[in-house]
Length: 135
Image (cartoon, rainbow, N blue to C red; front, side, top):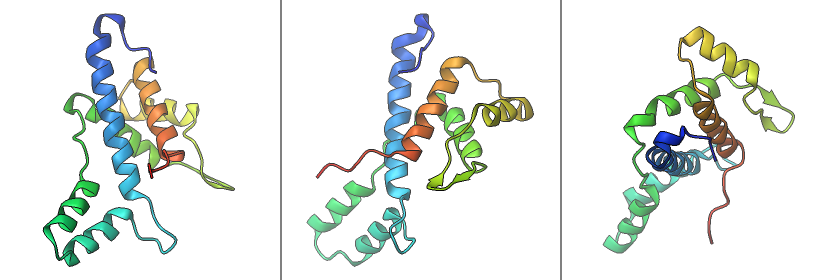
């Protein structure tokens, strides 16, 4: 859990939780299957072919993403920019590194506080190791 400034703890914890919920849903829907199709694309195709209102409602529920808190969208954008430039390892995407975050901060002019970096790191962990879907 990020060390959010004490005077703003409850407020920012709620925003952080909202951003994490948004990110989890985005990562889940963006995950690719073995054919290279995202879950989002697959569900949209199923939605186009759904015949019953119940089936449509179920697919629409799976496609629903909680809104990202507008107050922290800058952290989501920073994470996406960093993630677009991430390296690859032997087993896939490599985690973001401190030098990458430092270079991003210096070159972009977006100087992140320690608690903001912790949220970016948490987004990175979710990206690399998404939670398993509930069955």
